[in-house]
Image (cartoon, rainbow, N blue to C red; front, side, top):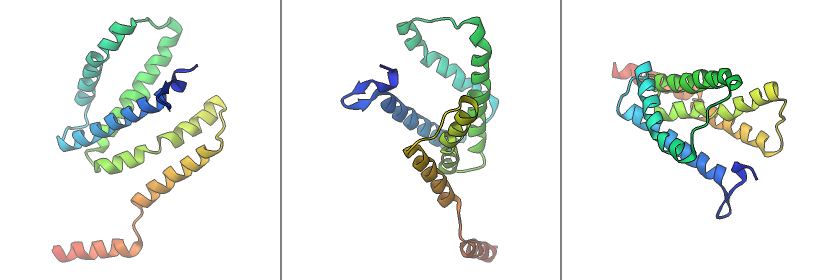
Length: 162
């Protein structure tokens, strides 16, 4: 049995952990915006420091295992590009956009993961995955789309307030 196939009262452990991660990440976006934290490298450093302290207990409980020498370049690539780079871009985006808009754009993550999985791992999209990707893209489009007449009305209202 794989970890993601474990059972929690009829549900998947993987699904529960993903939901907890989603809640935590949503809170991260909202609190970063609420407390007006700059999305600079110092914030990323503090997040990494907090994460190190936070993960100490699981490492202590489970036992630390050193990675093999051959996996170090891959681990460094994963740490620098998607993790640190992703957090940096997310916190920077919060300086320019509302938290809900940043999250909407980040909802494209499964779509890009699917594309990269197809290109790099030769995985194929099946069944409901197509439907999920479609709904994600439609939701992003609908959240960002403004009819032309609405844009004109907003522009007209803005000119009147000047």
